[in-house]
Length: 264
Image 1 (cartoon, rainbow, N blue to C red):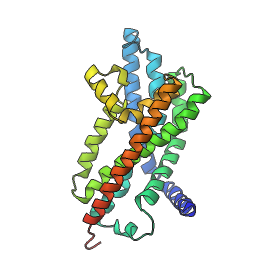
Image 2: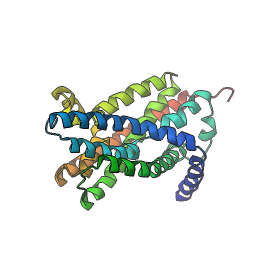
Image 3: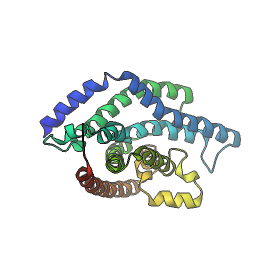
Image 4: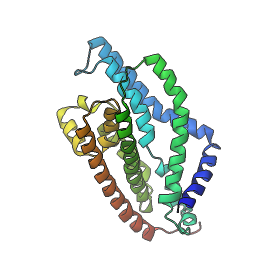
């Protein structure tokens, strides 16, 4: 099995380098929103002194770390698999002796993500010089962030794939995915740090798993959480990953039974 993943990595890594324009397009897609929010909130905090206790430097540090966490935990499964389901070319993957999503699609996501992070590095360095964030990052927080980011990506992958599987039943899957992404951004802490949400929305965010994907790793890296809080959130994220995988498996099996590739 390791040999299969190694081969898929080599193929997908080489393939990613052939689509440099696509890489740049997606990179800007993930960069624009956090940078805009950074500029807006730092301006407001500078004018008012602080916003609910958060200073301009707090916003700079938050969104600078969010840039990295966002790419590290994001997934693009619907862009890889959505059209294959709808045009019938998924049948080419179904004849393989391995699970096509947990091999080909997963490795494609990882290769894309690795190249995105490499491309982000010089841009992040420029932003660091421009905004000069005050970051007090410890080795312990970095080590704890590694499993948090890995679990965050796995949860995003399972849910993103599950939403993509809706294409087995309807061509409206893109609209559903966009709605999900908007809800995710609100309750994961991408629009604004969750501490600034109104009490009702904050309580909803606490109950949903989305904050564990973005807000939790950012707070963890910035040293805003105790070790106990970090371990609790890691445990919750692991549980949500198991639940996400279970949902992924059920919907996949049902979708494959529904799938037909007439004329493909």
